[in-house]
Image 1 (tube, rainbow, N blue to C red):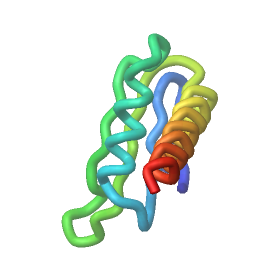
Image 2: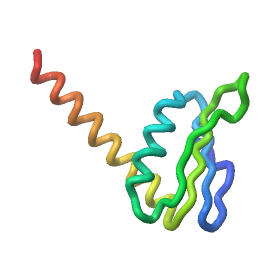
Image 3: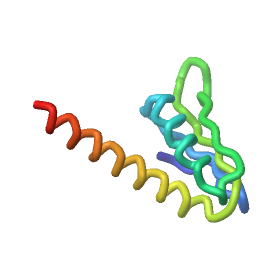
Image 4: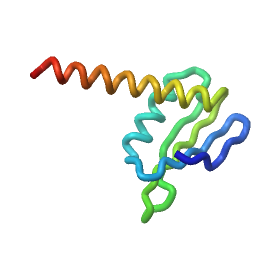
Length: 86
């Protein structure tokens, strides 16, 4: 992940090598927070196809980290549920 823009109330993060679905899932997780007013993922360029996450709101770096942590917890819970089905 590479920070493209870090201004008051606005972040743009290049998620090079990642899937747009992961970036969109992160945007959706961020939108569950009242401090985040906007979150979306778009490609940086049609041929490069690296997702760029655009986020607006308050305490954005902290909120992105919280969203990543929440997604990680969900993934671990899903993994555990799958193991129990074997």
